[in-house]
Image (cartoon, rainbow, N blue to C red; front, side, top):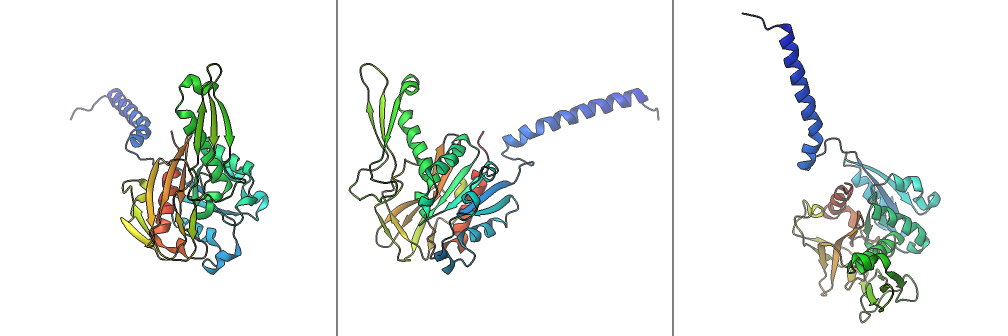
Length: 322
């Protein structure tokens, strides 16, 4: 058999090598087009918990540790816990700068975290470097309230033309005497906006900020009935269409928050109450997910469906927006 000249072997090898390198160079784009990322880094998760003693009736090692223990079973997550008693309340710059998803549980001590800390977290959400999961009574936490203020400003400005928006004067006000006063059922739903367009000068916007609460609750431990509204949403993956939380606290609408982009889960009670118990907001380049179940006296976070919701949310929110 006649041998191929060595030079031709080298030419063929060079062409083959060039093609392999070309395909390898294209591989990340191809994988991204297929929704795959073989080099994806772990999702950095911080579970923040005020750790009040009442939790220990259902969670001997505290509620936040219960959630973190479950999430650590997923190799894709790097999970740390922080608490109110930690230095800088566990919310130091280094912690927040290395956090992809912040899970927040607060209740009777929500007011001990300053609005400025909440604004620092909200700015990271807006920039797309951090996403927030607010659980149960974290509706009155500083980061959730500041994130809702951000979204309310976005909504108020969105209706204006680009030219009007660039010159608009935004005046913010609160319809309630303090930050954490529950609304009455007859109160006007917040946030709401008034626009004033003088014949000369910029548009004046008076934004009545979201109260971030609701007019009724009942801590009687009666079951709540969860219903999946968006079965194709990433947060709903693997959930049955309906499931019960055997012991929970009731919250009743209307919830004084900006209109969400997605309502993934609704909840009802046998006495007729209803609540949007799983909601998503896009804020700037980031996202916030509010998940209602989770009163500290009941072992809600030991229920497979509930922790599945949190796990799904971490996985989805942990991927940075382009």
